[in-house]
Image (cartoon, rainbow, N blue to C red; front, top):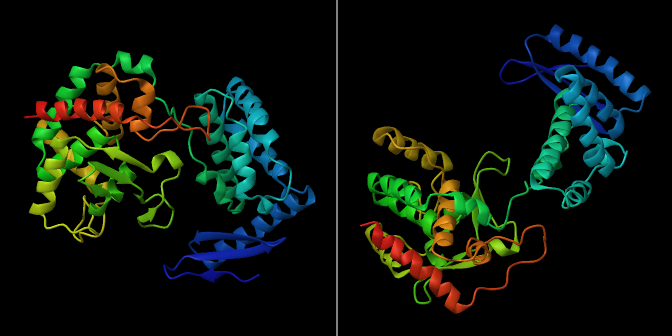
Length: 361
């Protein structure tokens, strides 16, 4: 069978078996590509003889691979759970016939387990299909599209152990070391609890200054697997929400918008083009510089998001209300969301955050 040369001067081959396309790249010579094609076809013959194109046969190969890597006791325990949670939740069909529905069904069947176990099994599922991709060039992308499980309600036991004063002091150190752009970015994450993708998706038109809220309806992410950032609708219903804003924050945002000449369709946190969001790398790089230049303890944006949860908890706000404010769903109940915050409870949270902003001066 023919082999091919790509634009970088590397050789590759491709074959089709039962409608599944196999592609191997990166060979230095034509002869090397042909030799590996022959070896691959021999392996495929073995595969076809034992029907390894079906999922369970590939799982057997994956287990053999794991057995070579792991200690016997580790392998036994890992495969015991793997069989129970992963293998038993997938049908033994030809791999290319698997659909996203199969993967969603697998994920939903994990719901009753503890969160650590759920994510462990989710990762094992991803490892399995990465193995199939790497060793057999059968690309099944659905495993990587599964969302990780998270603790939706802030755990009051964890919040009780966090030192609110230390967290505030660290935030203040970063805040005062930043320029106006990153001061607002830090403040936005801390006082609204937005995720990084939500932060990047904020447009000026998302602010309703009359009603004093920020409407979260868009996320901007670079993790869609297409090599660039795209705008998406938030993945859960509860993530589309109104975040009510304190007067102190509104004043800072209005000043920032005016000084930067931002229009309604512009991003709050813009790149060189005001209609395009700042990149994740730019944000992370800038905070690394602040951290290094000022010899500060490391913080993450995700940590800042939990910071406001801790602050509110220590100020007497219930973990349920904190979860609603942060746009979370009810833990372990996928379709249920928290009851809406009453106006009084919203105002109480906003007042506490306004007090925090005044403490920054």
